Image 1 (cartoon, helix red, strand yellow):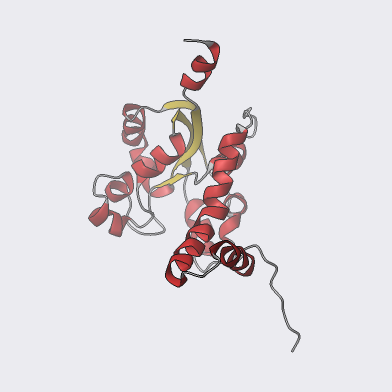
Image 2 (cartoon, helix red, strand yellow):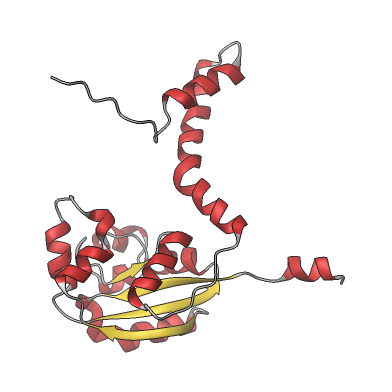
Length: 207
């Protein structure tokens, strides 16, 4: 095997942030055993009592939603255990392991996931996992300020961006294209994407 083949054969090890929330903190040892038996390596671990202000900063993307005040109160009500977990495809694997955010639905659709086992409601759903490469980097830095995080390789950052901001819009456009079957599909799709660009500035008319 030459050097290029060796590089291609290497497995990229991802990192993700995992939180055991206040409602499941008494099951931390049990959950950690499951983590280790699922192929993760625990790179860092700490038990911390967050303030409401810290919770607000951590969940800043949820600011303005109706459940935001309840979320910050709940997350600051008792200690949480934070982990930096590593393995191949750590982000997706951990999200799959913890399951859907609603434990009630999870018990029906994913009965073996951790939230089905330890969670009781949308708010008290026992665990947290980073949603993406960029979120993992940000959240790890938040919980472990002194940690050194290697930059995400360009190809993974690009994949993350496409998954979050491009793929869903493009899929909708292609679906509409198939329905309408225009004479000039390339021009039609280009016009549709311009018109339905989710990042297009909103025009607010004065009243």
